[in-house]
Length: 171
Image (tube, rainbow, N blue to C red):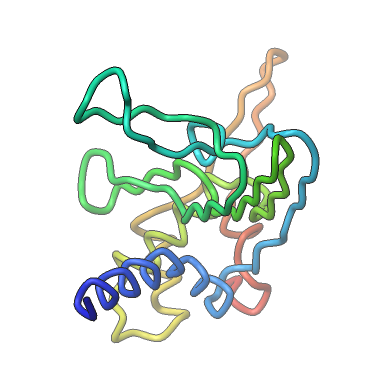
């Protein structure tokens, strides 16, 4: 019994790992609140739960959640290599009560660049180095410079590290 509890606690703490960003060189995220009819998925579907299917013994079916909490951790994956991080969805906490939902979720500008850069910083940089050296490694190996082309032949280039890092870590 205690082994299962230890495993659950370990997985839950891993789910909260994204909170380390609050003590990193990255700007802290904000919070966004929603209250109203169920409208926000957790992450792909509206809040739901699995129940035994009476028509098909041994099978499960999903039904809408009537009352309960859902915690969704930072969703990400690697694509082509161990360091090619891709953002999927942001963390959120959802409470459902008979068709209504209260949600608290993270709010950042440019979430793809923000979370992917932090994932690289957290999982792919040399942790024996200082924060500044790790940020320099991020900028070199995982640049977040994007150019947008507009119809009138104008280009806008943005280095997102300038937007997502705390001011004291900018160059």
